[in-house]
Image (cartoon, rainbow, N blue to C red):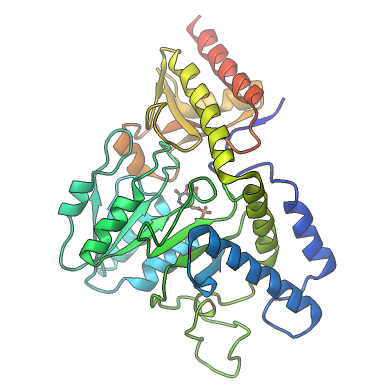
Length: 384
Ligand SMILES: Cc1ncc(COP(=O)(O)O)c(C=O)c1O
């Protein structure tokens, strides 16, 4: 039996329609969008346009030209962070951030360009809003916050942080890599200026696709210059969106797969997927809580959380447990520091990290039961 419980890394399997959409593009109309006027190029451009429109609808972006297609959330976050911050700017982040925020900021800090402060989080991963507020300086340009923690499953009160930003005239950048497709996001209501998403997790697209959404035109510097298929006679890169941040041939394979992934979850109903996964996650947590050797991190079972469970087992190393689950039971999970050292420090699992089980919309109750029983057997066997 093979059980895939590593959906927070990348979701698998992909829904029906995703592989078909990709195959159809490659087999039937594999042109380059925006580059030529022939049928295939136009059909490819239509797919890209429709995907932008769907994404704009998903996040409540008024104009789909402000939906930028990128390779993943990491590229999108780099575009926003390096393209917006200038010498002397100050930034506030939370203590749960992923390395895709921490590392570009650390780079800019080490180059002597920006300063940043880190708002503390409690042991469940919730950001301390009053601490965040107390860190605001006259030169604070941006608050960056992860929406859902890939380590603890914590979902931040994003609307409250948005209100804080609005009150203080600060830009709000949200890392929605883990929540896109799982938690409804309304950039307008929640005062989110810029949002980074990835396509291969809970939007169920293929790897290599993601993007950046802006609620309105925000002047982000072009970091990668090149061909856009527009204004081709000019030596200067176009300043209008989306071309401004989309140099080079777009990943149309990824776009067609992403579109099909989003259409699948919208057809199923994001709320119903969430309810189903939340019930499975709660059951998983309740059963794990019965094992006295197991420590579960993050929000309590009754609180809203992502469908992932990070644990540690007394006197056991997460990577050893993951290897046993994989080799002896065919269960695939992720151990260690999940690209988020700050988050592990917040919840008290640094430096060993955690053993993370993460569910996707195709995870069955039987698979969850099997994972519970398998972990129990490993623990019981080692205690003998
Ligand atoms: C919270 C969070 N932010 C950002 C990323 C980066 O996403 P990607 O690998 O698609 O760039 C991840 C990926 O695991 C993540 O969990």
